[in-house]
Image 1 (cartoon, each protein chain N blue to C red):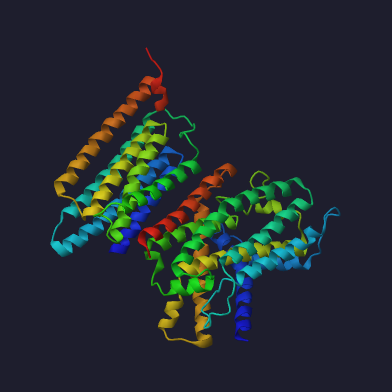
Image 2 (image 1 turned 90 degrees about the vertical axis):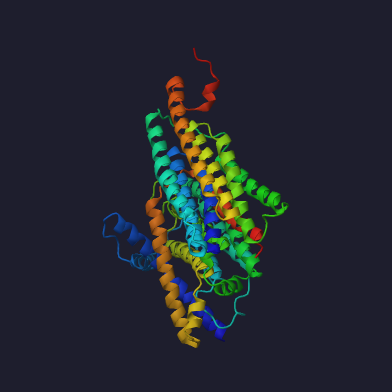
Length: 318
Length: 218
């Protein structure tokens, strides 16, 4: 029973907070350009507006095109269930490990690429081929990063890893964790179509990747696609903050328990998410969009950073 | 203290990878400056430690000299040399960047296996810092042979020197003062001579690409 309540809180928090991350990133970017920018809640307004509109589907599109938004959002929400947002008293509720987590995310992405190919528009094919390239380059480093912490924590369940790192003290003062943190930051930028890899705010055919794939969607389907993209982004940010900057220790320090502990934990979690979104926005302001053929260099660097962490673990032997 | 030194040694290694992934000479110089600042920080931490425990100040002097020479003077000198030579945008390296970075990765693994067989220096966490700094030397060497431009080669030389200094520092907790100073004077004169040579090469061959040195000029 309690597990169901926790899972429900988890899903509600993730879905409600996901568009806010985009809002913060856009706001910080606007402020650095001396603009006022759209309000923080703009993406919620956009989503509500889109949900009310009807859907236009090309008459040559098959069932994949219609099913893809639902599969995308289902996979994003399912992936969010592997990554606990706050301190839960019982640890049994989170079955499933990181390999399943990565492949559930890959399933949503796979159907997104298929749907982009489905209508046979030129942009769709271009976007999905680029997306396939980027994800193939980035996924190894994500897995190596996760496996390194899994080796240290001696478990592949993300919940167990978070429990373990919460007992480490300050993980970021340890070389293995600091390398993993740097690698995961790079991976988040590439996975969530942020600036050095892809520009989310442009519709220029030469540069767009994610936008090119959802170009054919409209109305409710577009809202679902955008919501699933932002949920995926929040899931990655959650992974980053809860593995490398754990806060469970702090809650335990104040001797809180039960629902008070969960509320405080959620609050601290949201603060960390806001800080990471500001960090991402700052990186995005300072970076220039890479050429498509320079992305392998960035991916190689991300892979090497995670692999160095892996080596350091063996050198240190702990 | 030990965990800070661990992190600094890892950041040094990471900066050498970033150096390898950079394409432009300006970012090479910037990364070198960052790396030297990390070394100064490590020397400062060791210096404060030795001041508290043994009353020695020499490592703090070394730290100040590193900041003066490697963080401020040499990068500025390189910027000036670079501003004087004619610049053409062209491919600067022999292999593409992912292969270069994977090569560096092989170097780190190789160093780890080579050093795990030696006695004496592999006691506990010392070993990890020595592995990182010895790989820094080898990566500097690899950087030197992978670039075509003369300034890139100077940066590679400086990275090798950084690696030697850091290896000595991490393995012995501070070398004799006179040895450190001798190394710095050596380095300074070497870089100045190399800077003048780059200038001369550019004057003679209209380029600082070292491949052109093979051509005959009357």
